[in-house]
Amino acid sequence: MEPAPVSAPELLHTPLHALHLELGARMVPFAGYSMPVQYPAGLMAEHLHTRTSAGLFDVSHMGQISIRGLDAAAALESLMPVDVLGLGVNRQRYGLLLNDHGGILDDLMFVNRDVAGSGDLFLVVNGANKQADLAHLVERIGHRCTITPQFDRGLLALQGPQAVTALQRLLPGVNQLVFMTGAAFTWQGADLFVTRSGYTGEDGFEISLPADATDAFARALLAEPEVKPVGLGARNSLRLEAGLCLHGNDIDTTITPIEAGLNWALQKVRRTGGARAGGFPGAATVLGQLDGTVPLTRVRVGLVAEERVPVREHTPLQDEAGQSLGEVTSGLLGPSTQTPIAMGMVPPSHATIGTRVLAIVRGKPVPMRVSAMPFVPNRYFRG
Image (cartoon, rainbow, N blue to C red; front, side, top):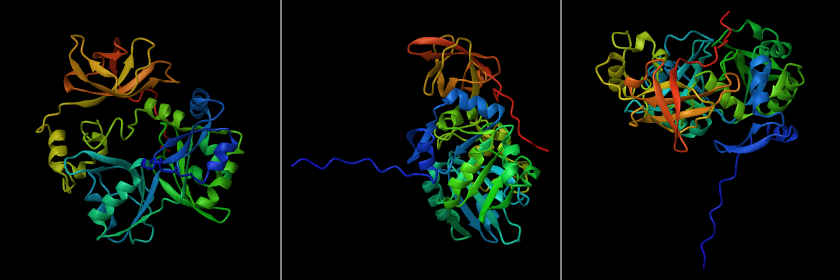
């Protein structure tokens, strides 16, 4: 008797699944969900529309988590090398969950919603990692605070220079937010929480809302003349042009924040000599690398090809003598830059801006030069 075939797990649907199909999206599996990679207009048009007007992204696959209690901020700070205790009300910050070796379990965004003084932190973590992140949080700090997954909520990202124009019509007053701040809003009786942030390098917003309000709100946004739907393909090309890391590609559990070039995410108060230095997983390694007492063997760099040949992830990198340096972690032909751009890991000896390296594409060396990032200037609204 032959064993029964093992069936693939059924893909989950976001609250906008029916809308994606209605709009003609090409759906692909992503982080356990059926997600739109692009709509009929195509990746290039969606990317450029976001750069010039406003693109609407369904990011409801991401993990939303509430951490509450008087000890919530101190508890979360014990797991990350960032300043949580000093974050002002309705302020947002980029965070990094680390393992005991200093490797990046996940990168995330968190906001202090504590308007009543009782502790209220709201996290948005990567969709592929949300169950593992939740288990990690519960195991490490669940005895100190109340951790509540909100994986059933919708999450939309409205990105681009005209995002504020369109969103202001639905949520009056949202224009008063500046980059990395958030506030609560109400729309047709639904409770929304909006932050002025995103993953494209453009001005824009992320909107957390109840699942049963997500479809109607998305349709209301798409009815605005500035807004068009955008899929995962353009989300990836936009974030790469913005020099932003993708967990699982450019950062992972073996890469530390310092190797990833994320030194800026570690505030002074958590560094050596700071008032609350260390105390997070992997602190000896991370702070040692930051201080120069633990040597770095690799660092993340930006790369621009000198030939019009797209260079994809996992492409080997060599020096001009043919010695292995590392590999490309993300790469594509930039729709805005119109040049092949990439990020990769190389030894510090080859990380200086302008250094020439060779990407080996189908056995052929493609010359690339180490470049500053972002590849396209960020346009965040800071007020």
